[in-house]
Image (cartoon, rainbow, N blue to C red):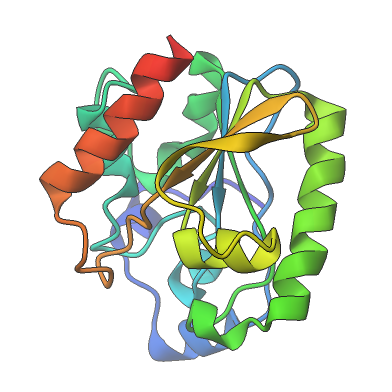
Length: 189
């Protein structure tokens, strides 16, 4: 996907562009030997329209990453490739974009877990941090999983479960999210 200009960064997608983004895929931000591979549920239509992860205004991922100490400044979704400089990356359980994660069925999430396991084996991140408890519970058949370090591993990677940073998830306020992400940051070292 070509790099967006600064003008395109500021422009919000139109309703038509959002509708056309359904089913699109966003490339992973990934490299071998990452310290943390953040794993979202799946990209939303806004992310699909602009071609970057966690891009919808109101998604708190980038703000939380900075406040939790993963980045030295607050990056924008258009800076997602800069995460690789600090050996962090982004992928998703399911790669296709949807208007809502509720459009994904359990079988699709489980297939995503299998694909993710192969990706983790190939790229060997130290940690895989899931941003979304419900999807993780379904995908990995762990209905009682809670936030934090999980007892099992994915290949050799430590699994860490985080709350979903979407602005639509009101159960966790910004300070709560920062606290949970910061616990991961301390574990990563």
